[in-house]
Image (cartoon, rainbow, N blue to C red; front, top):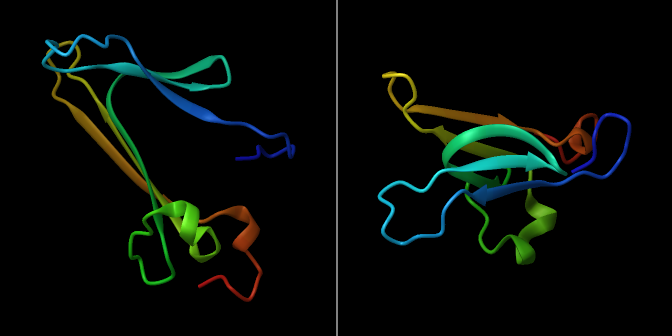
Amino acid sequence: FTDIDGASTSFAFVADSTDPGDSVVTGKIYRGTDVLLDGVSDFAIEYLDENGASLEPITLNIDDVRRIRLNITMTEQNDEGEMNMTTLVTPRSFIGYANYD
């Protein structure tokens, strides 16, 4: 990923526990060394082609990526239920290009 200033950046999900006996493993999403989200129970990135089909393995299909689906599930906190967030992202480099749908 690159940020708005063009600097390269990366995201990482790091589990708080690696104990297989834990019923729910939670973790944090980092951008570099900055914590973006804490209490994450699921983090998934799915790469999609122009028809919305999932591309697996991504290493063989990188040129076909047109959208990216991000799914984040947050654990229950303060007696509030689990929260699931999903969004579709169109990479900035596709805007205005012939391969953008």
